[in-house]
Image 1 (cartoon, rainbow, N blue to C red):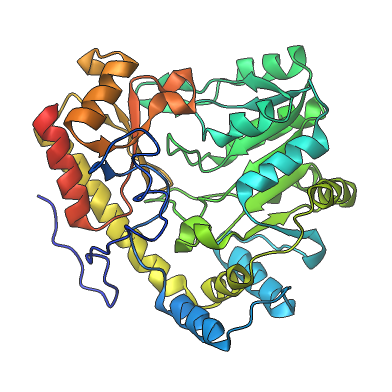
Image 2 (cartoon, rainbow, N blue to C red):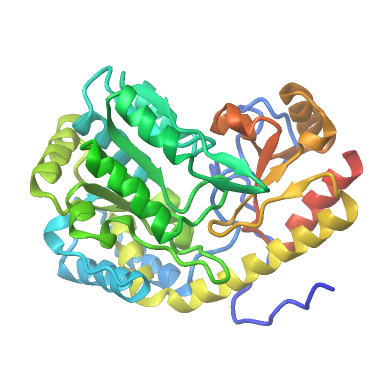
Length: 395
């Protein structure tokens, strides 16, 4: 049976009303065509307040009352550097760092910097849907190395990976690590095999590692660039505190580019679009998070994992037709509804109009996601329970 929840100093069970705050998740269901009163479990932000240390730092800064142009001092870099050294055994250098207002923005800048119009950029669908948007939206060619679903587990099709790179003359590979939405945490041998093929064909790698702090059980996240000096020289590593500490709206990401030439090309693209300064409060929140947020993160991870166990047990008992992929990483759970035999449109209609749930449709992540749904479980238990009961009552 499911174990009782832990008692902590943090109030993760508290349901906080987010309506009326401009929340993309809660205030825009009608604009997205979902109607009123749907329960949103889609976009990847948490329904928990961030760490108290961050709130206190932001409160002090707001009381100062002046929000002029802002840059970070050495203490900011030391906080980021310390986090990656302690948690991932990766030593970064200050010269590598380029700050951007978000990882998706950085992906777009990398596509523009490292591939010409019409050139191939490789992704692995089903994958985070902005990957495709920043490729096609910038006039580059989307090349897909579909992940293989074998025995309830997603794997890289390495033969297709190499063939697509060679035949499509791929210049850039967007790696999602940990993978969103399927929840894979790539093993070292998998990363090395992809890395060696990219080296062989002179393909640059942009590694989106924004979910790296959410890795479960005995799985371990390995920073791709840290695996060898050769990988380091051909990689742009995208990191941010936004998923880890629920800070997405403060718009700050830390992009590491050890190769000086690549870094300068990347900076030139950022300069060309005129977005070179970062949110004042975002810089403060990031520094405070990496200096003081570890205890909060440890507890929120325990809570979210208990949420997953609750979801898994509930669906196994009440809706065994729904296959649950146990996430190795991220707080997003990939659900397989294909046993119901519904078309994509029928599944969406039943989910939204009858269950009154707003999940992310699997097809958003590529055709490989048809028949699947992605649910965000970083929420109070009662919210999750309500969603699952609504699901049960319809399916």
